[in-house]
Amino acid sequence: MAYRIRIYGRVQGVGFRFSTKLVAKRLGIKGWVRNLPDGSVEVLAEGERMEEFLKFLRRGPPLARVDDIKIEKVEEKVREGFHIY
Image (tube, rainbow, N blue to C red; front, top):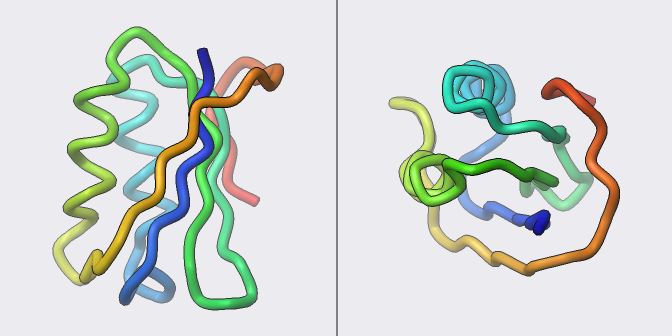
């Protein structure tokens, strides 16, 4: 099962995507992360250790401030690796 996640707050320009990729690779999560025009970050992810990954996303890297997070289960094909767009 894959998850589409939107993270709101101070999440752009603070290393959020890069940190997300590092954590995803460490946890064996596949998917991608990208900035959106409204200032939020979107993630599509799948893996055995999703709870740990979601815990990181709720907190973010040190310079980030996560105000809200929306998590939706989706049936989407997630390609191997973890990518930044």
